Picture 1 (cartoon, one colour):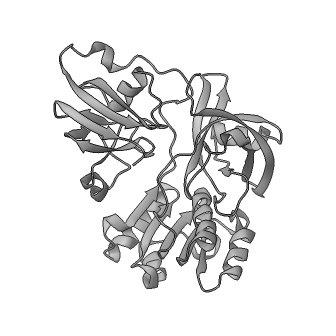
Picture 2 (cartoon, helix red, strand yellow):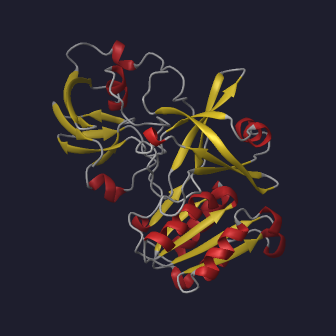
Picture 3 (cartoon, helix red, strand yellow):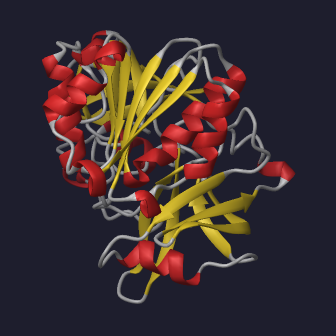
Length: 347
């Protein structure tokens, strides 16, 4: 495995949050501290051993904050019949070594001084806690958290959220929704509950049903799409820890190419870009360490900027229209549509 973004970290602590959720706290060596700088709301991708496939890759949100926590941590909630989550919750212990990718993801506010509405259900609270802790320490914005759970015993970070709200009474409010007391949330009930905060940016994280209900509540308040930000939990169809299969570039006819000028990690590369091969595949084929996780357009890790030329994406689940209008694109889905294209990462 020669991907320089792959590292092995030691588990420094395991915290039992609820009967079904554990937090893994990692020790990051000093020499990797720059590699593991992260933004509130990002995630780590963990390599979970598998006797059947060698390994599976799973993404877990960081619950720690870069503004107030010394060590990075992810929280894993047990999923019924979920191979990776059950293995982690049942077997991982202090001192274990886990292979991970560097922090990735684009969920979370661009800056910490604006007012936000954060809607979470179950383990969707994990990136929300990272965002809230960061806002209270590193910014001046106000936050309202709507947090839905089955019952009181399933509330992850219950004490941490209470302590934060008590410490910042004028800036943080937590609204709990317990199914055991109020039934499943409905669009109308959510819309009524968050009405005073509907003008803020909305951040949604949780199961698909919850996301649909909150999305309908946002629509009832006519919240523009640009102000709604979502983070979805899904299994990866590809595995960034395993060798890549042969890509389409080996079967692309010679001459059917564009020229790509790519700025990445302080260097500029000029490459032939076959017109039917995604940019990410071209970069990896040429030994260039481009960032990626899912290769499925969902995580946003491979986002880059089109500086010159024209491209198109085969599919897109991570970028909104305003970001596309600014020239952003996803390397794992992007194909060239002009003879020469200038692409920049890390913008």
